[in-house]
Length: 400
Image (tube, rainbow, N blue to C red; front, side, top):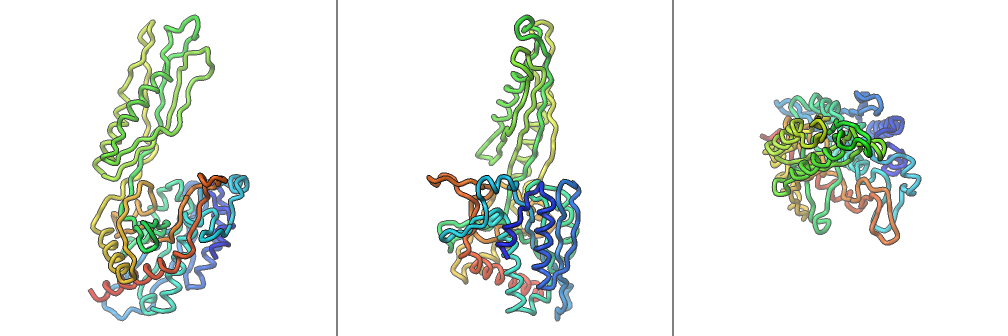
């Protein structure tokens, strides 16, 4: 099943491939009694989100039947041309399986299937006592907000948990693993500088150099990074000028900011927007000032440390102890769809199988570069951990 999924190119900007993978995924889960709903992403350059549901059938309790959300995504970061250029395809080598999305996140989708299939077989009473909702994002790698809204709507009532199946990380051996209980938030900015053009030879003093102004702005942005506060700013791209014999009148740059703490995050946003008032480069001739404009392109709030995620962590840790698996909490710098759900529903992440090299399609003879892979030996132990923890979550709900 995983091989069939990996063989489909589901690059975010390839909606046909994303939808093909959605169809295959719906076909696979239909065997477990799930019905499929496809929801076109708001941006029609992307594919269709997939929502799979199976309503509970028999709960011998006076309590309302609970919902559990299981979250994955359909898209990967690899254009087809990149896969072909790097010969990046399904490949079994030693203890690893390589291929696009094996770790991020098609292996996680398979983990969801294994969990539900096992629970149906060995604990049908628990399998039937929950409303299951599987939510698969068509454009997670582009952080589309409309999928977050779908998650919140489908998990609005009586939800026990939102379980996110991004790949897990090994911490010193397969018996030592990490689960994600917090993630950084992110904000993206476009900085534009308008200066004054002039001939670089005959009228240099008349110009106001937009690139020079941008360089000073970038230095300020870089100075805002504070590793102690886990606050980072990254100037990702910069452009400016037209020809070398002209004082440049325009420059632009794109910046990304990340932070765990909501307070520190808000402070970072304030610092960036305050740069709208910054101007230090002027024309020598007439004092014409460069103008700086900072636009916020998007904000994704931090998934902060919280009681709901910690409660799920403790449950998984207790089950892990019984299985001889030590589990530690992890706070990751990258975002996931858990950033959309944690404030409404207890959320935990990293529940997928273990692997590595996410987002990398290249490999080299000296081993300095290697492609994305999954460790197949981790599927069954991780599935067993998840099954037992989820079963206990359901049991505690009905017994509580």
